[in-house]
Length: 325
View: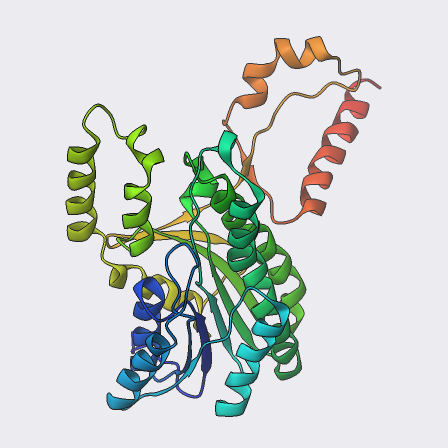
C-alpha cells in the first residue's frame, strides 16, 4: 500500500520532549504532520522543569524540513491544557490529533500510598488527558474530524506492585477513551488507547525504587541488569510509534479500542464477558455452587457498550420466561 501520511494534519503530543513522545513526534513529523511538541521537562517523578527539551525537538524537526512548535504548558491543570490547544491554533490554525503521552511516576506499595503520591499522578495522566482533550474535542466537533490516542499501561490492565496510583490513572484512560469514542462517533472523531512496552526513563526509574527489590527475587541487582539489557535490546520506543501513528491516522478503522505494542508486535486488548450462570431466583449459594460456570470463558462475548450488555441480560430473562411456559 502507499505510504500513510499526515499532510495538512496538526498533532498535539504531550510529554514529547523525550522517550516515547519524542519518538511519536519524530515519526508523525516525518510523515508530514505539523506537530506541537509539549513537555515541561520535569523529572520522572514530576519535579522541576527544563523548558529547553520541547524546543530542542521542535528545532530538530524544523531542521529536517518538518513543521513543529514547542509548548511548555503543564497538562495537569485545565488552564494548561487549554493553553496547549491554543498553541496549536496560534501556530497552525487547527487541531486534528491529540496523543496523550505525558506521565510521571511516584511508586510506593499500596499500604504506604499517600495522597501526595496519588494526586500528582492522577493530575498528569488522567486529568491531564482530560484537560488537553476536552478543548481539542470541541474543535474537532466543529471541523468534523479528529483522532485521539491515549497511553494506557499493563500496570493497570494486569496490575503491578507499587503502582496503585499509576495503574488507576492509566486504566481510567481506557474508560475515558470509550466515552470519547461514543460521543465522537457522530463527528468522525475516533479515540483509542495503547499500552506500550518500551525501555524508557520511567521503566528505568521503576527498577531503581526500593520497592522493586522485593519483586525481583533473591538477587535484585542481577535481575535489574538482566531486565535492563533485555528491554534496551528488544523494546525500543521506535517500535511502539508506528502503532500509535496508525491509530492517529485518518485510515484508522476502529474507535474505543485498546491495543498494545512493543518489540515489533502489535496486539489488541479487549474485555470479554462470559456466558455465565442464570437464575431468576438467584441466591448467594447459587453463586458459590456455580462459580466455575460463571468464570468459564467458553463462548465469551465482547460488548461494545453498556446497552449491549443489558440487552444480553434481557435476552437471558426472555429465554428463561419462554422455557418455563
